[in-house]
Amino acid sequence: MSEVSASLKNLTISDDKSLLPESKFSVEQQALAAQWTTLVSTIQQDASFIPKLNDCLRHFTYVLGNQPTNVDALLFKAVFPVVESSIADEKTVADQRHIIRWIDLIQNTLIKLADAEKLKIPFNAELPVEVQQ
Amino acid sequence: MSKLIIAGKGQPLAYGALIAASLVNNAHKDAIAVEYVDEKSASKQSKDANAVLNDSTIGSGAIIAALASKYPDVFGTDSTEITHWLEYATKLTTKNFKELSEVLKVLESHLNFRSYIVGYATTAADVAIWGNLRANPIVGSIIKNKVFINVSRWYGLVESNATFSGAAELLTKSLGELRKKSTGGKKEGHKA
Image (cartoon, rainbow over all chains, first blue to last red; front, top):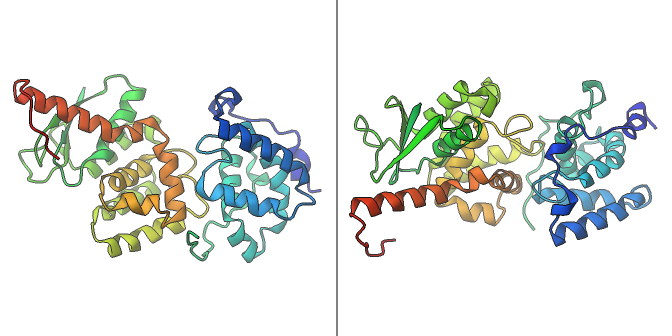
């Protein structure tokens, strides 16, 4: 485990005022939150976890919609090391573009990482345009 | 106090300027008085001023830029990047679908790794681009059908801010009141 991912465990939310509180979750958001909280424990064994999360972040900025929640923080800590280890690969970058975008948002807002610890985002990578299926 | 006049029949409607003024007023109470005229132009000096600020700054785009440099606490620090996207926003008023698609391709690729246009919060760039998209009648279906996936995601994020999503309603309501007043409270026939 890299130093960054080791230190991730101790990270706390830097800006919890911006979080949508659980008490305000819609029924749909409650269901999604429960689903992701259960799924995150399988991230090491379940190869479909990353594509599922990427699909979810394709149409929404945060995991549960347009506002940050504690589910973003929870998933961020689990997903960061996985994405960090594969970001050098061009194909991975294209396939995980939505997760990478979301990581960059979270690491600069909800969970502020020091610059050296941040995932390096390939802002200038030319990706094939995605088409709505 | 500053005064912003919005032309109710402006082409395109000055949603960007109206949103910018609302954002300023959210942070600085009553900093900008907003008035409406039921005309194509908000200024006597120009035939097609969709909005005018303090009788001198003409057009939605110029007004957003002026407010952004006056209120960095609301819009973030001015940067060449923001200036670039303010200029880009002016290309989004075209009603030619093919032309608009070409322009939106640039934004789609920019938003591959970005949640906001510049940085990690709403800036003047989001105001200018979102405002012009909202005012363009051919954009609605492009967003809804997710022709550009990243653009649609970003549009939804910005729209979730009530100041943005409420702009159209605010303009319609204000114009309705204005028309009521000008007809002396007489009931008007339904117009489109």
